[in-house]
Length: 115
Image (cartoon, rainbow, N blue to C red; front, side, top):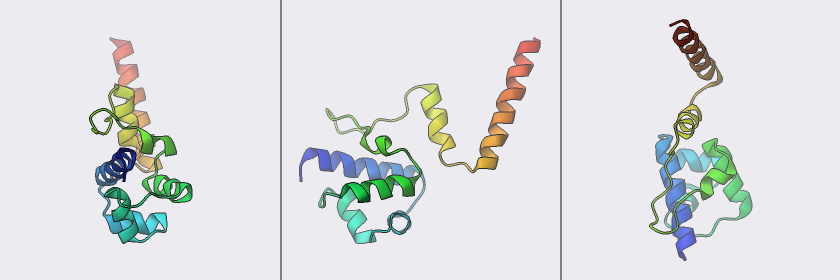
Protein backbone atom coordinates (compact mmCIF):
# COMPACT_ATOMS: atom_id res chain seq x y z
CA UNK A 1 0.00 0.00 0.00
CA UNK A 2 1.06 3.59 -0.50
CA UNK A 3 2.08 6.28 1.95
CA UNK A 4 -1.43 7.73 2.30
CA UNK A 5 -2.71 4.34 3.51
CA UNK A 6 0.14 4.15 6.01
CA UNK A 7 -0.57 7.67 7.26
CA UNK A 8 -4.29 6.97 7.52
CA UNK A 9 -3.79 3.68 9.35
CA UNK A 10 -1.37 5.28 11.79
CA UNK A 11 -3.83 8.10 12.42
CA UNK A 12 -6.62 5.61 13.19
CA UNK A 13 -4.37 3.70 15.57
CA UNK A 14 -3.22 6.89 17.33
CA UNK A 15 -6.79 8.16 17.77
CA UNK A 16 -7.94 4.74 18.99
CA UNK A 17 -5.14 4.59 21.55
CA UNK A 18 -5.79 8.18 22.65
CA UNK A 19 -9.33 7.09 23.46
CA UNK A 20 -8.02 4.02 25.31
CA UNK A 21 -9.87 1.65 22.98
CA UNK A 22 -8.76 -1.79 21.93
CA UNK A 23 -8.91 -2.82 18.29
CA UNK A 24 -11.75 -5.16 19.21
CA UNK A 25 -13.76 -2.39 20.84
CA UNK A 26 -13.31 0.04 17.94
CA UNK A 27 -14.04 -2.67 15.39
CA UNK A 28 -17.25 -3.62 17.20
CA UNK A 29 -18.41 0.01 17.38
CA UNK A 30 -17.55 0.51 13.69
CA UNK A 31 -19.31 -2.73 12.66
CA UNK A 32 -16.18 -4.24 11.13
CA UNK A 33 -14.06 -7.19 12.14
CA UNK A 34 -11.01 -6.68 14.36
CA UNK A 35 -8.92 -8.32 11.64
CA UNK A 36 -10.12 -5.78 9.08
CA UNK A 37 -9.37 -2.88 11.45
CA UNK A 38 -5.90 -4.28 12.04
CA UNK A 39 -5.32 -4.45 8.30
CA UNK A 40 -6.44 -0.83 7.93
CA UNK A 41 -4.13 0.29 10.73
CA UNK A 42 -1.21 -1.60 9.15
CA UNK A 43 -2.03 -0.18 5.69
CA UNK A 44 -2.75 -3.63 4.31
CA UNK A 45 -6.33 -2.79 3.33
CA UNK A 46 -7.87 0.32 1.83
CA UNK A 47 -11.19 1.04 3.62
CA UNK A 48 -14.34 2.15 1.84
CA UNK A 49 -15.82 5.57 2.48
CA UNK A 50 -18.60 3.88 4.45
CA UNK A 51 -16.04 2.15 6.68
CA UNK A 52 -14.10 5.38 7.18
CA UNK A 53 -17.32 7.11 8.24
CA UNK A 54 -18.16 4.24 10.63
CA UNK A 55 -14.68 4.46 12.18
CA UNK A 56 -15.06 8.23 12.70
CA UNK A 57 -18.45 7.70 14.33
CA UNK A 58 -17.08 4.91 16.52
CA UNK A 59 -14.21 7.16 17.62
CA UNK A 60 -16.71 9.99 18.16
CA UNK A 61 -14.64 12.42 16.11
CA UNK A 62 -15.46 14.49 13.03
CA UNK A 63 -14.62 12.70 9.80
CA UNK A 64 -12.01 15.31 8.92
CA UNK A 65 -9.97 14.47 12.04
CA UNK A 66 -9.09 11.11 10.49
CA UNK A 67 -7.24 12.92 7.71
CA UNK A 68 -5.26 15.35 9.84
CA UNK A 69 -1.69 14.16 9.59
CA UNK A 70 1.62 15.53 8.43
CA UNK A 71 2.48 14.00 5.05
CA UNK A 72 6.13 15.06 5.12
CA UNK A 73 7.36 13.13 8.14
CA UNK A 74 4.49 10.72 8.82
CA UNK A 75 3.96 12.12 12.30
CA UNK A 76 0.26 12.50 13.11
CA UNK A 77 -0.79 16.05 13.82
CA UNK A 78 -1.32 16.57 17.52
CA UNK A 79 -3.54 19.34 18.86
CA UNK A 80 -1.46 22.51 18.75
CA UNK A 81 -3.53 25.42 19.96
CA UNK A 82 -5.02 25.56 23.41
CA UNK A 83 -8.55 25.34 22.03
CA UNK A 84 -7.61 22.23 19.99
CA UNK A 85 -6.22 20.61 23.13
CA UNK A 86 -9.41 21.41 25.01
CA UNK A 87 -11.60 20.08 22.17
CA UNK A 88 -9.52 16.90 22.00
CA UNK A 89 -10.01 16.28 25.73
CA UNK A 90 -13.71 17.14 25.60
CA UNK A 91 -14.30 14.48 22.94
CA UNK A 92 -13.86 11.76 25.58
CA UNK A 93 -16.23 13.32 28.11
CA UNK A 94 -19.89 12.73 28.76
CA UNK A 95 -22.38 15.57 28.39
CA UNK A 96 -22.58 16.01 32.18
CA UNK A 97 -18.78 16.20 32.42
CA UNK A 98 -18.78 18.87 29.71
CA UNK A 99 -21.41 20.82 31.70
CA UNK A 100 -19.16 20.61 34.78
CA UNK A 101 -16.23 21.97 32.77
CA UNK A 102 -18.41 24.82 31.51
CA UNK A 103 -19.36 25.69 35.11
CA UNK A 104 -15.68 25.69 36.12
CA UNK A 105 -14.81 28.01 33.23
CA UNK A 106 -17.62 30.39 34.15
CA UNK A 107 -16.59 30.43 37.83
CA UNK A 108 -12.95 31.02 36.88
CA UNK A 109 -13.89 33.78 34.46
CA UNK A 110 -16.01 35.56 37.09
CA UNK A 111 -13.28 35.17 39.70
CA UNK A 112 -10.70 36.86 37.45
CA UNK A 113 -13.09 39.70 36.54
CA UNK A 114 -13.60 40.51 40.21
CA UNK A 115 -9.90 41.11 40.85
